[in-house]
Length: 245
Image (cartoon, rainbow, N blue to C red):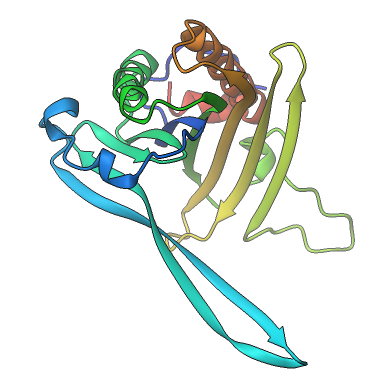
């Protein structure tokens, strides 16, 4: 386990996500989230309609029915130098891509924008809050994965021990914070034989039933951030963190 730090100067974060899921108020439509440039700022200069695609299959009288696809609009995505903001009928998501800055800056911007979302959508309540950080660790290879991860996959003999790719996913419960987290670890394929790419994807979340104007939001997100940090530093070795400190 690595020694926890409050900040890494060269953090390996490729995407930081602040997510709000809501219970939708009847009558909310996608068009309410179009043309928000004046409200959210000129740093979000690219707007894209978000759509979902649903494929339907079936059998009628013992015969397969030709599959159909149903496409529907779910919101608007705004992208620019400030980050990526999704204004959807079922919630709001803010993403900051690399290079990462600070938690205070990322959450501050997400909090500013979600207030605009709440004023427009007026949801009945918030149903899920989440902090998701995707880290890509680039370390010298070939190497023993135990040098960089505290819990890499272990292969029993007589299986070959040289792992080229792997993917693990665990869901953990933190009763102290009343939150859960999904941890995904993966060894990604690399074109450079002298570099190993390790993916560490941590999604810390809490199921809630809170009014949109609830004042405890910053505190809840601080707790989710704490859970995310605990999992990160527990998952990697000191040797790994020293590369990014």
